[in-house]
Length: 269
Image (cartoon, rainbow, N blue to C red; front, side):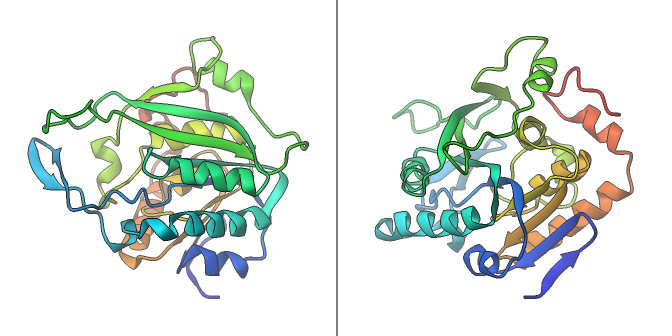
C-alpha cells in the first residue's frame, strides 16, 4: 500500500477507505468521519447569492438499496483499528444519519452524544416549501460498551465561558481564510474539528479521517500536537490537503488557533 503523502505527523492515502483500512497496521485513538451525505440529487441551492446545483460529485451519489451496506462496511473496517477506549465522531444530515446510527448499534458501539451543529450563517431556502436547513448532526460514540473513553470535560468548560458544554454547538461555517488553498464542496470548518479533537484526544493521539477531503481533521490534529492519517479517493482533494499542511508548517500555530471561532479561553502551552 503506497502512501500518497507522508510526514512524521501527517499521512495521506489515495483509495477507497474500506480497502486501505484493511491493510493499515495502526491503532487509532480518534476518528472523525464525514462520509457522503448522498445529497447530489440534481436539485439546487443558494451559494453566495446565486442559485447553484447541489451536486457534489459521483462520490456523493448512491443507490438507496446499498446505503446501509456501505455504512456498515466502512464502520466495520474503522472499528477493527480503533483502540479499546477510542471514540468516533460522524457528521451527517437526516439523509444518512439514521443509517449510520443503525450500523453503529449493529457493530456494538456505544452512542455517547448526538451533537447538533447549528450553523450561524446557513444558505437560505429559496423554494419556500420547508424550513431552512441550518444544522448538521454529529454522532459521538465509543468503540466498546464497558470500556471508558477520554473526555476533556474541564477543557470544554473553559472554552464555554466556564459552563458545561451542551450538545448544541452554535458555530460558523468555513471562514474565507480556510479556503486559501482551494475548497472541498463539503469542507468542514476548523471550529468544528478543533472542538472534537480537544474534547476527546490527548497529545500524540493518532487521529483518522477515512473521508478526509481537504483534511480539515488533519490540520486541526496537527495544530494541537496530534498525529493524523487521512484517506480519500480523489487526488484533487489530497493535493489541497498537502498544500494546507505545508502552509500550516510555515505559520505560527498559536496565531492560527486564535483565529478559530469557538475557542475562547483556550490557552496554548
